Each structure stands twice: as C-alpha cells, then as structure tokens.
Image (cartoon, rainbow, N blue to C red):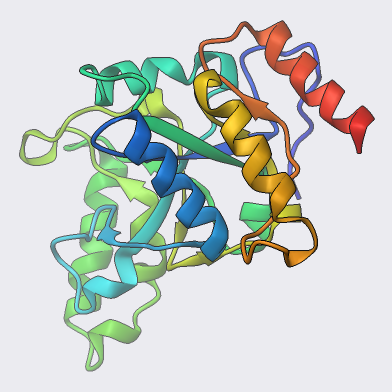
Length: 229
C-alpha cells in the first residue's frame, strides 16, 4: 500500500507527526500527557477546499500531521511558535497506521489552475444534487488545499497529512514521542509508574526525542529504546 522509505534517505520518514502545543513548555507537556492518557486526537477544525463551503462542515474536520523528518521538524515549530520553541510536543505514528484509518497526504490545487477549476466544478455539481451532503466529492475535499485562494498562505513545505474525524490510538500505535529533553526524566517516571495500570495512566514505553537533536542522535534514541524492550 505504501512505498518504501530507505534508511539512508534523510529527507523522508516512515512516520508522520502530530504536533501539540501549549502557552508555555510546562502547559504543553501537561497537554501531551493528557492526550496520551486519553488515546484520542480530536478533529476540531475543518480543513481543505470546502472547509467554508460544504453542506456538512463536520465532514471536513480533520486531525493533521507532518511527514517532515524528525531532525527537520523544528522548522515548523520556529514558524508556528517563534516565541517559545519549547512550548510544543509531538506524537509520531507510522504512515501505515494513518493510511489504514483513512488518512493520507494532502494535495494542492493552486488557485486558477485547471485542476482547481475542475474541483470547483465538482463542488458546484454536488450543491445542485437533490442531496448535496451525500455527494462523494466531500470525501475528497478535506485532502485538497487551494493555495492562493482568497490570499491563503502556501503551506506545502509542511508536507501535511490528515485523517478526517477523530483518531483513537493505543500506546503500541505510537512510534515515538517528541518531548523537550528537559522533560524526559519526568516523562520516564510518569510512564514507568503507569506500568500495570498502577497510577491510572497509560504507559508509553516509546523512544523520546528532542527535536533539536541531530538525526544520528534521534536514530540512536530509537535504537536504544528497541534494545531495552
């Protein structure tokens, strides 16, 4: 179903990352732990070509990820959280896990191009149907952005993936966690206390990576975690 990613390809990754954030580093860490305990990512906002023009806006709500490799994901943080780069964390999932749940990479139809106009025509045809909400085009639109339309920003460099609707997951579904190194000890203590359900929390015995690390250090953390398990 998915193409292979060679280990030596530093510009590609077999995982996608969902980024979480907070007002500061402490709140961001607490938010991450709460998400992990819930095993639930909420699709709060609509995305895609029909996010403002759809019979059922809820059908366009999605959970977002980036496939930017771990050692390069800090560029997204620098763009989105310039005031406090430590006020974010991340949860990585294998791409296959996301695809099996109906997710995938988004596409771009630049405003004014033939494929953007074709998509617009399909949406207009859907509105003309007796039951517009039942038209299949609305299953496509969350996965298509139209850069340049109404002055929208060009986000291609984020290499975004999406899943429509909320996403549930288990500890075993997580490939690794992105946590600032200053919280690694606290996170390790939290997860170790959760083994066997002793604390009422969930034990995510997964690699912990600081996104400021080099690629080799990230890979080393993943190797060492596999050896411990």
